[in-house]
Length: 357
Image (tube, rainbow, N blue to C red):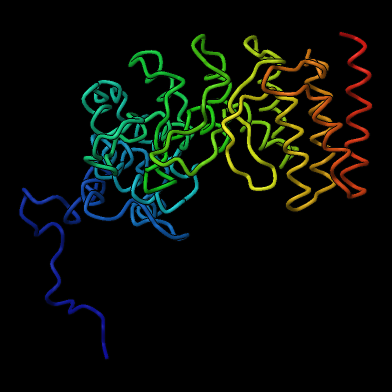
């Protein structure tokens, strides 16, 4: 089959009307960007989105124009990013999408009204969620800003909008939002160290405040400090969070905080304990659960660390024996070589520090 055009019928461009541009429609980057608003910019799989394919096809210079035109006031794009993020797409991806949008819409701060924060931020009260997937979720909810590593948005909410650094907010990555987490705990959980440092530097920070707010009483109470201890003894790479608490100006080595629980049943006892008591409970909890030599070593190192910071192993209270007495009690009652050997080491360390007080 001959697919060549009929040369007799073909018209020269010089025969075209004077008001028609040569070559037909001129596809400018602006026009492509307008067309792109009708296609998907957010891909829910590993394949590039339709808009990204267009940008790759036209080259870097037109791509910048397409990005500018496409993202300008495009709230649908942000909403799609938020909805996709709830399926645990990477925080790095969500951050990149938001930063691109914010770089084009430089006046985004004016969109973050107090009404939006109250209606869509859903802080730790029992109001109804009016729009869980609001396009500005990362700008109205500080926990979402932490999830997506948007430090500028977090700072704006705290410094301009007056968000309490000790407040508890829901996370998009942990739906349904029936449990609200302290912002510092969110930063630790999301491994957002920049946000963590920023929150810990706030004058109003309470390093012994509770980690979470929940509508049920079935969960054990724990503070953001005890949470930092937990993540460190489970993962050596997260020691810097624990270090930051111990080195903090508000750290008191012998302060008591919510953290008492039964190591055998993991049930909340409602006791106020010191960091030494808490670490001993974490050590003994292995006796009733899964033993790890590495975890035991980290707990022992943490005990020595807080002793260096001023913890008193012989300080007792009317309702609570001293850490040294508790350790000796565990040593005499538990009958496993690994736990008695570890407790013996801990007791000897505590006795050395007892003489220094």
